[in-house]
Amino acid sequence: MSEHPRVGGEQRGQSRTVINVDRAIVAYDERPILRGVSLKVTAGEVVAVLGANGSGKSTLIRAVLGLVPLSRGSVELFGTPLRRFRQWARLGYVPQRLGAGGGVPATVAEVVGSGRLARRGFLRPPGAADRTAVASALRAVGLADRAGDPVATLSGGQQQRTLIARALAGQPELLILDEPTAGVDAASQEAFAGALRHFVADGGTVLLVAHELGPLAPLISRAVVVAQGEIVHNGAVPEPAGHHAGAGHDHVHPHGPEELPGLCIE
Image (tube, rainbow, N blue to C red; front, side, top):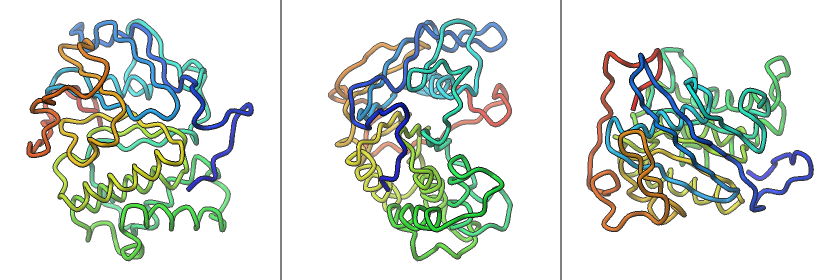
């Protein structure tokens, strides 16, 4: 899955800044969630954002995507201020575990194919390149044999793999993932780790939130630990990694009444 257009002559893998968060502050109802956080991610890195529930790690991801407003500070993607960024085909996003079918009787291939919309546009019908990208993404997550099945018939782990394949089908340069393996089976975690390994080998950049790393641990080039809305560690994965990165820790994400619509405040 290497058909990535270059913008301004840039090549994937160069040491350029892909994400730049500068002194970001996010508050809900005057309650601070992020407290002046700064973070840079350069091309080719795999950066894991770790932290306990309520630390602010998922809010940081959503601030990068523009899904929550900043009270202060700024975010840039590929050197462009977020408010002016329009090159969404360069970015793939996998949200926290959600029903991939959303109640719609769609097949696995149809859901994965929706990941091509940012690249081809809504009005143009799928072409050969789109079909090739979808097939490649399904193979990457081990779901090629389920392409024609309704998403509703898949297990939770397989539905999460479908969301990951949807992001990969768009052939992005940057993947942003919010707890992609939380609560899914071991086979799906291994399949995701394999897909991510190929993506990174092709020069992709990854920013992911994790409560545990499990089979993803060998892929991580840098860990950022968030506590009480601040970055308290930025470097190698802490040793011992702690409960938030332990392979044996089973994490179920809480969803409380303070959430914004469709967003989990953490």
